Amino acid sequence: MANLLSVIGYIGTGIVIGAYAPQISHLWTEHCSAGISERAYALWALASALFLGHSIVIGDTVFMVTQLVNVVALVIILVLVRRFRNQICAAHARQLHLRE
Image (cartoon, rainbow, N blue to C red; front, side, top):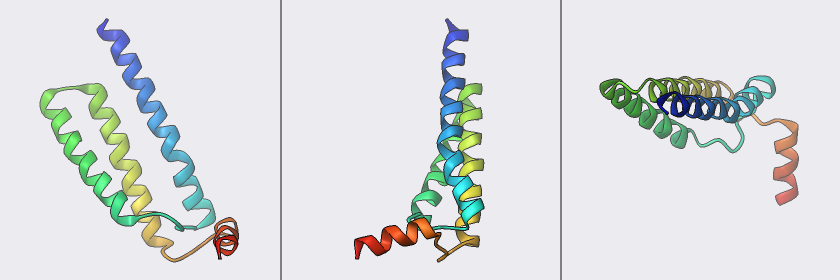
């Protein structure tokens, strides 16, 4: 049963990676930070770091891996958002233009 739960946890970690990948890819390839709340991502990074600390203390490997993935992905996003601050891709520019 413990192995099944670990597998489920690692599948969840894979989903986390899959969720962050498009955001990181868009930031990296399009240099576009439109619509990204730096404050929200910073708070998520802090929360994930705290959860990572907790998972280390309780010795939960799956939770440690998931939170490590979260922290790394969130830091990458924050670095790219700062690097490409106030830059917008053509797709987001069209969306903003259509709203006006």
